[in-house]
Length: 582
Image (tube, rainbow, N blue to C red):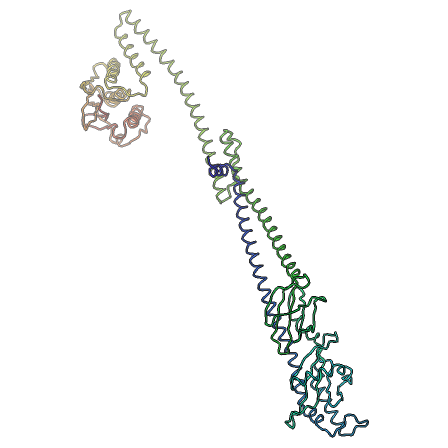
């Protein structure tokens, strides 16, 4: 026996409950494996989509920051070309350093302040706005010199290099602000002479807080770093010393290591202000989040698996319990303890289990009924056998008495009494020996002659019987006492119904391979109504004898054989159809 056959034999010998549990566990395990594999695949896809979405969100929020800077730049451009600003700065007659300014100067200064307030007072990201011209600062709050004086030289250099374009640079003040500087040129006279500088201090950190972090709808906190065109850090959330030494020149996302800490970094480098935006996601936090999600999935899968296993166990136990109940019934049936079999428990159940139990209960009830019927029949047979034995005692006793009378009559010379008792004894012995059997026609003729002798002793010359049976038919089978019944019928309906002598003729002939035994008399015949009635209803023993003889022939030889009774016009003829004998 190889291993495979051994495993098959082991599986076949397992109990039904274990087989079903193994199948359910295998299916649940396979389902769990598929779910876990799908979950890991989804997590992997989730990581990739997360990286892509993070990069897209960073690009989007960078565009929003750039749009805020564009709005400030547009306001700066409008300020630099404003008519009031241009008019005051280009007027060389105005003395910006006079101790007591004239009315014209005051009016021009007020118009300049009104223009600056109009463009910058409603912008929440501009902390300080000032115009520098001919060594004088013009600001709405009077703090322009304090803010910009220290950085005026490098800012002026950048502005002159930009040739009228706006420039944003870091303040290097450690407050995450930007300096915006633009050279104001004469656009009214179209000579583009330098008139001064527009200086703005921008709260860049507020822009980032409002635009970047609010735009990143993530479940974990990212860290932002923004670099200027020289690679200096404008704003960062990274711990000190973890800034990158270099960064890509194009938009991309990648993994970076900063002082041994792994980050997922996404870059946006398309700023026309020369800014580079970098978003850093700690891999530890990202992995922790995914690990927590994995653990949650595993715990949920384990819980669902355990719950399904418990449910399957209860379901299998419930189903197998009904099979075990059926097996218990079969064992009780096998042991013959039919009286202990429960019935009626599954009468109202319509499923397969109910059908099995109901079928077995019906079979058990039928079997018990058959057993009881067979037992009663055996008792009846035993009782009949006992009665038959008892009945045989009396005929044997009578036969012995008849034998005594026969020999006594013979001893005293009474030959007629001796012959009567001898004939009666022969008939009695024949009925005891051949009761219910099939006998040859020869033996039946012998007993019939004894019967006719007894009847002649009674009726003397009124009865004449002639036997015309060839020897070739003497071996044909006939029910015992069958011919005697026919003779008794003729004597009953012919002899006893007439005053003259009664002639009875017994003869045989062959038709279609069958023997026809006929008993014909010269009596008045049988009434037509009696002949048409198939069953005797008058209690006549002779008619009952003919009925019994007909049934015996049908049972012994089949439907092709039987009895035919008819009136010949000068008597009655009864014919028996019998098989051809040897």
